[in-house]
Every structure is written in C-alpha cells, then in structure tokens.
Length: 41
Image (cartoon, rainbow, N blue to C red; front, side):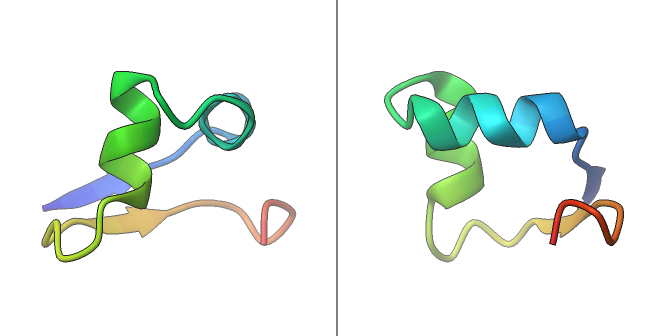
C-alpha cells in the first residue's frame, strides 16, 4: 500500500512514538510504502 506522509504527521510521530501513527510509521516489516517531499528527508 502506498501512503503519502505529511510533514506534520511525520514530526508528530517522531516526537511521540507511542501513538498509533508512530507505531505504524516505525513498525518494521509493515509492507507499507511511505512517500513524502524531499524537504522531509
């Protein structure tokens, strides 16, 4: 599945990895492909 990540969502997940979004983004082997802007990288 392809998912576009907004910068605000990414920083929120980085600051609090215990949220549902944080667990989804940092879960290994989730089978998800994340896309974002070059600025976030």
